[in-house]
Amino acid sequence: AQSVAQPEDQVNVAEGNPLTVKCTYSVSGNPYLFWYVQYPNRGLQFLLKYITGDNLVKGSYGFEAEFNKSQTSFHLKKPSALVSDSALYFCAVRDMEGTYKYIFGTGTRLKVLA
Amino acid sequence: DVKVTQSSRYLVKRTGEKVFLECVQDMDHENMFWYRQDPGLGLRLIYFSYDVKMKEKGDIPEGYSVSREKKERFSLILESASTNQTSMYLCASSWGTSASYNEQFFGPGTRLTVL
Image (cartoon, rainbow over all chains, first blue to last red):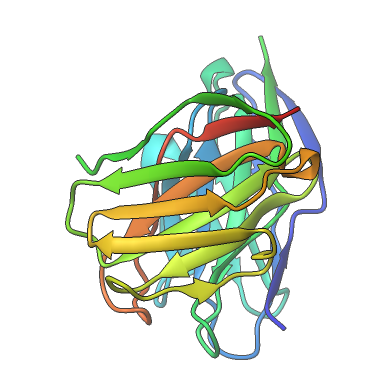
């Protein structure tokens, strides 16, 4: 069965430092991977996706993600964190071999400290 | 900009009531989804629809039903609300076929409390 895991419930990082939010996946075919962000009392917003091609994907608000097939990971990164990046981040994978559902991780709360 | 709207931001209902949550999208998207979001559990798919009058069960459909009579509108129905259905409900839409790789657009959510 397809699945995605976010091993950290919370990540704390100082403003200006690089940040990484981790995601690993398990799929039986080619992975189609997504990152979303949720600000307080808001719905989810799309950040970026990996379908095929370059392993480094660039997205909104200066975020990027690195696809690593051998480690089955799709970690979200940003070179310099802002306090305004504090939010809940979700990784998702698309099930392309069955129902075509999107399967979400449990979320990682990012806290950027001033 | 794609806009997905949900009928209520906050809703309080009594146990046993029939509850309707409405979702409307304005970008002619083919696909629509209902999730519930609970702390520590992430998003769980309740129902989804890839076309008008079409519906598919997600991972947790028990106690829920849906209706999609028009392309832009996808309704979630709690037939007889129970306290364990207290949650944040998120509607989403996406364009393309069921097998496309397109991202979802989410509404702001409805926080439902069942007393």
